[in-house]
Amino acid sequence: MKFYRYIIREYAVHDIDGELTSPTFPNPTVELYEYDLIKETPKGYWIGDKRFPELIRKWVSKTSKKRYAYPTTKEALINFIMRNEKRVKILEYQTLSCKMALGIAKQMKEKLNKKIS
Image 1 (cartoon, rainbow, N blue to C red):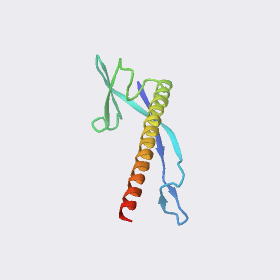
Image 2: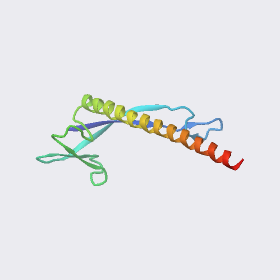
Image 3: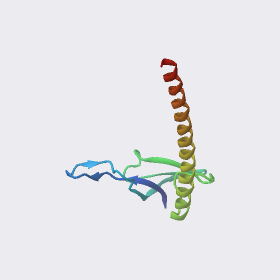
């Protein structure tokens, strides 16, 4: 039995000199990871890589709505979409909060500059 999880992966790019560097523009890829069933328990599964079962190991519940990996690629893709929609909402909120705090800080700086003048 296999389990699946989609992830976002970004790879370095080669610059003009042939050196690896961070991309100047995002270049995400969506990759599917496969996990092997290591052991089944009454409540869930231990999954990982059969080649290295002691190194890469995760427990996945049989009944939980949110799981680390899923038994079908369709469920894994639905979970990937939900995870990333939530991530975008969190990041948008944090970006808005940072912009508002920057505005407040700039107003405070202007007031300080006026007091010094």
